[in-house]
Length: 126
View 1 (cartoon, rainbow, N blue to C red):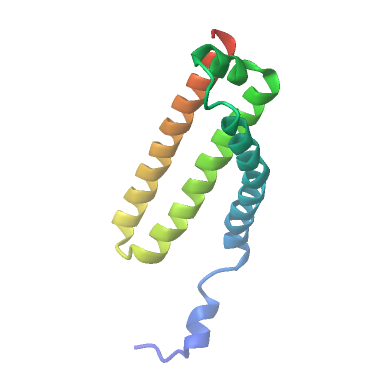
View 2: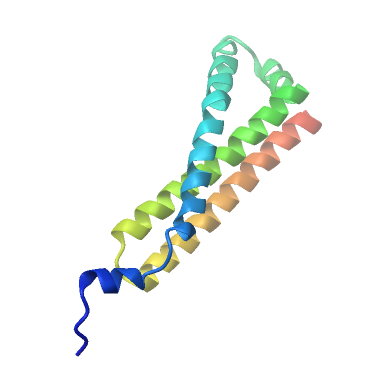
């Protein structure tokens, strides 16, 4: 039986440096999403009466394609980071936590690849 104070136990739990990178990436993606979301909102706001060919032309414009790809990547990555924090905070069984984070990451990779494929197909093929 070890007689250690709570402070002594806490000192052996690692460095705050490990979580800072994750925290920083979450903030960077949040800041990046602000102008991207505003751009996307305004871009979609002007398309309500547009036909299919107009939407395809809008997505196919080079600047819109790049910004849409950036929005997709930033959104999926930000969501994956945020949900990972939720799982780490509220799931207490280690194997369930690891399996859930792996499944979430796979889900976000698949969703982002599908969205990127669709965007590039529209932009390049029409």
